[in-house]
Image 1 (tube, one colour):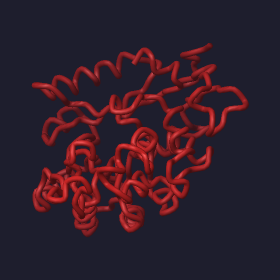
Image 2: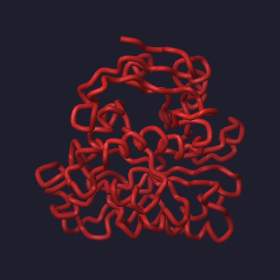
Image 3: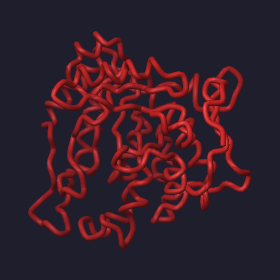
Length: 302
C-alpha cells in the first residue's frame, strides 16, 4: 500500500479473505484501510458467510468467489473443449442451483455480490442466475458483478447491460497473454482473438471498471490503460479517454460509488493525478506520475 500513491492509485478494490482464518484476514485489511489517509480500500470479503459480512457491516460480498478456474490451468469453464485438451471443458465449482441459491441469499440480504468467471460457460451460469434474480430484485440497484468476463460473448455483454450486471475487467490479461502469439492461442485457438472484450462490453453499455487482479498482473493503472488502448485485437481496443474512464469512473461505478468518486467535478471526492502533457495511450505505461492528490491533499509528488 505504501507504494501505490506513486503509481497514481487513490483507491483499491481489495478482494480479501484468504488463509486459514478468512475473517481475520478481512478484519486486518479493514483496520489497514481505516488507518490510512492516502488511499481508500473498498473491502470485498471473499466468503460465503453472509452472517460474517453483516457483522462486519459491509454492503458487499465476494470478489474471488470462483465460478470456474483459469485458462492457463485448463480449469476455466468453456462451452467448447480446450484446443490442446479435447476431452476437457474446465470446471464449474457451483451447480446452477447452488449458485442461484447463493446469489438469491445475497440479494435478500441487500449485498452486492461479486464472483470470478473466466470461461463462457461460467459467465453463462452467472448470467442465468442473475436473470432469475431480476424477476424479484432491481439488479441495476444491487449491481452484481461477474469479474474478469474474459471469454464473454457479445450476447453476454448485451444481457449484462440490460440487467445491470457489472464487471471488473483486467486489460493486462490481453497484454500478457492475448493475440495470435500469446499464451491463450495454443489453448483456445481462434477464441483467443475475442478474449477480454473491452470494446464490446463498453459499446453494449455495461458498467465496466478496470483492474489488475494483482498479483496476477502488476497493480499499476498506467499498464492497464496502455493495455486497453493497445488490445491485440484492434476491434476491442479503447480510445485513450475511454481507457482512462475505465480506471476512474468505471472503477467507481462497479463499487456503486459513482455519485462520489471517479470524476473531476464539483461535489466529488478530490482524487486526481498529474502526468506529463504528452501522455497518451501509446506511452502512458512509461510516463511518471508527477503528483497524486487524494481527498484534496497531495500524497505523492515527484
